[in-house]
Image (tube, rainbow, N blue to C red; front, top):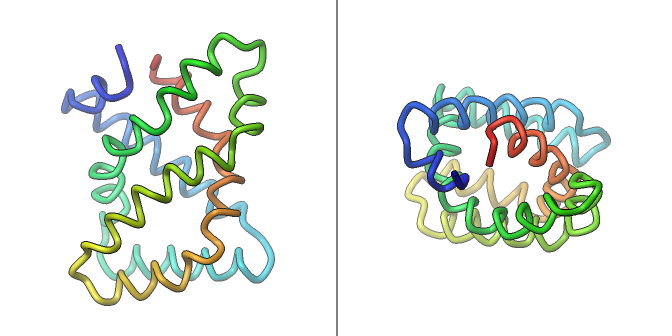
Length: 144
């Protein structure tokens, strides 16, 4: 069953989203330096503005992320090191994921959320690339 199929199933999709939130929390916590502080502050702002927003956002974004990630996952699964494949292709994967979030941000109605996204976007590629290998954990745990 593909990741897209799993996300369409309400029960399975909820579990995948909850796991993705946990991974995102860990990834944000792992950021360091000045840009890491900005990411942490932005993430904290989003969580404070609207509790449950991260889960809701990932619930909406994961189905759009799946077509970006799945072709890479199919190629990675036939290598001896899927995490290594994702590390080697982190830029391409990050660009695809950020293309999804950029399109969503352009349509967003919440001015505060748009402002936070605009402030974080310049360093988003670097941070997204750093987190790409953790997607392997998500994909392996959920049997995609």
